[in-house]
Length: 464
Image 1: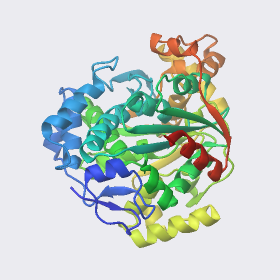
Image 2: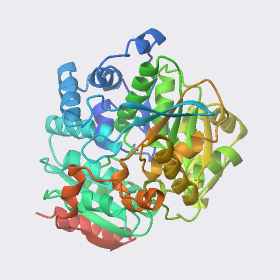
Image 3: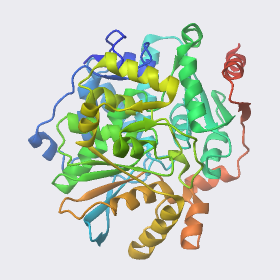
Image 4: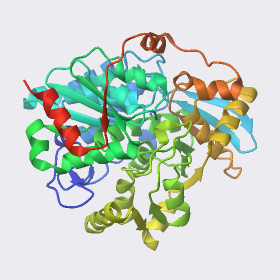
């Protein structure tokens, strides 16, 4: 299996190359040169099989010769050994509604109680294995809107030859999310509270990659969803959910950086029958506007009750644009260059048609979020987090259909106690795994949104 860049200017790469590099050298995002295929019979046979077995079947199609079958199986088993649910990503039906059967796909049973664990627990182990084989050291710089940072720390904290720098927007993540990052005891973990938005943090990471000499000097790489290994690992639960239902389902995905929902497109391109992928956004509705109005334009980032989605530049949308353009790397490169300068991209008619054939999009405000948490609790007894509520709100706006709807439930409600308490009048309760971080000392540095200061900060921490 070989991988290419969405911008067409990078040499072909292996899976391990893609894993360790994160971003392609031309600034693009890696995708497989051709998508591996599963037949309908192969997908149906996933029903009843352990999640780990399906994960191996999917990931092995991408890993090629980068890892042996035994290595991949061992890392998958280890990645999920600590999950609270043996199903890893269980389906829970919620009360019937006028829209037909609806299910929550619970993706929060890992060590940090968010969906990022499902991919990062695997990625961290594969990363360490590939690095040991290649030798040398790497520096990971990750921008997080709340959950990627803690999941990356849980996966990579304490590993040799890896330094982890996590940037979160100061004051724009929940207290639980922040403490999950800043209470890490590992010496190789460095937390930065950035004065600015997630988009500012993400922009700094991209700018660091653009400084080629510095990036090479420190062995810079990424574990954000720009790393294709994350996408491949997240595609697995689209297969397991469909196999468990025994029929195709519409997937409704709370969307910020577009990685989780693009994993659904990846599954579709591998042969999974998905009638529609539904983008659910909060007030940071760049993706809803792009799909509904045909203009991808960023604006000011709004702080909401669903902070992990407070994003105005959805990095993984580039992958969807590349596919929708017929894999036209030259057009994608020009489009992304223009967008970087003007913060606006008018989608060409053929590209928009291709996107709309696969995706729909709905936006949700904070009042809708609170009302949805309250309604779901009253109807089902299920307490959901604000991000899941954004997706449930979108699902309930979709016209009635016999097709089941699977709503991705991306975080445990306890990570956002203030919003949940506001909605249902009581604290959602906190698992022991979260309680312990509330009393530990925090360690973080506060930096302005300044590339030179961030670079100096990283250099100082890496100095022998």
